[in-house]
Image 1 (cartoon, one colour):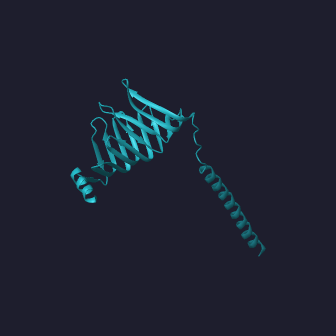
Image 2: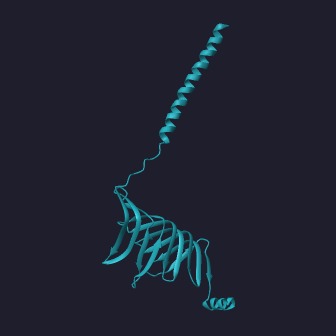
Image 3: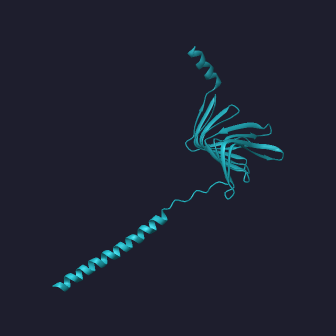
Length: 193
């Protein structure tokens, strides 16, 4: 009777030991796999900076930012509180856009601005979640909750593409437009008085 009891106890202890070893190896693997990626430290930090991009002796855009970080490996400038002034068309009319954060790639002549985007172009005012500028294509894209308006016209969409040469825009995704003829505005003002 002693022999079967000893065999059961030995098998139980052996199983327990194997279980503990396997469990320990799993825990070690998960800790190793869950290590957070180390943040790449920027090579250059700057406060109150200005970046300028030009071509053929003309300024294409100028961006001012509260602060910026640049990493030589990534070759992209991360900007905080950027304010962009871009110049379009033969008359070089200014487009102004500001946001909370952004990325500028001067060698690629591209930029992305994010969060609380607000801007103006002539009589137009605009807001969106994301702004992408692609200099080689001479196009700008507004994405997210896009609203473009002027006193007599308003468009809401999820994406708006603007051709900076022709000044045409294409709205897509849940597009809603509202036109307010100036004669209606005049009538509404007279009724209120």
